[in-house]
Length: 380
Image (tube, rainbow, N blue to C red):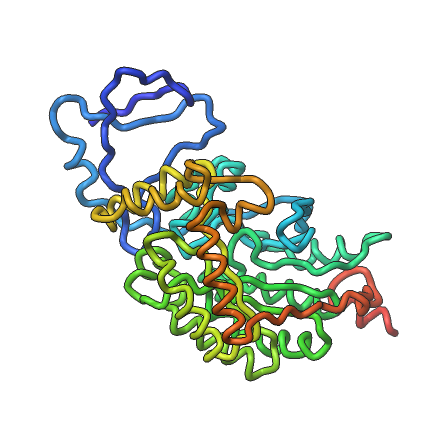
């Protein structure tokens, strides 16, 4: 096996493509590690004629998780998208150890110079002073509070949060400022912060969404290897609901021909767990995710890979992705319309149409210009 470098967009017409051996590792979701699309040159393995390519990739060592400090000067990311329901978000981490193969955020890792594949789930960027930076930004003159999304890009409760506790530090700031927020996670770790969330819920400041992709633990292990099991996520919904914290379930993403048959069962399970709202999102495959998902599908479900891809194209106007606003989350065509009707019927049947409006009127920067301790000192 040798390595060669190619222009980022080489002309390979007439060249027989080489099928790369899988890079799948135990506990990781991606089976490939595509190059960074912004690099002028990219490396590519190829067989040098000695038939050593398969042997080289036969037994790959486990991939450890590497933490890299983020030196960004801002922690609030803003958007003007008309179909996401929020205009600001905080992500304490970039990259996600959950390893969900379908994650629409994977291509964003290329902005940092890393691959959206295995790099996305093994090279995690974290912001050690995220709480302090957030407090400074919330104190800026003219800041107007609107619901803030926590976990819009990567999961705020991924495994590394157990030790770094950056998400909890963010919650502490938002509680002191009376700032409304919405959390999306597929981790049962959110129950650790029930004490803060319960206080904020009593003030109408928080809603939590648990993403439940499937009720099949075996399928979940393939799709999202380091996320909590479906049963634990539903148990987290129950714990949140019993504490008086509004909790919803996202059946997301729905993948035609793979897990979409479970839609009604997921909605029913959400109701049984105590959720008061539900929603769903159709699979999105932007940029490199198309290649990565196809490779993963071929490895884990070779018998139906072509069928699944065909159904996805049916919901995306013949392509594997549609980035247009208002149709990117739900798709188009007969299959997508049927999925939408199925969800609407199931949500109505189980009474999961509630939408809570978060209270933005309580936002008020507390005295002081720094941490909670500094704020307390300012009282003397």
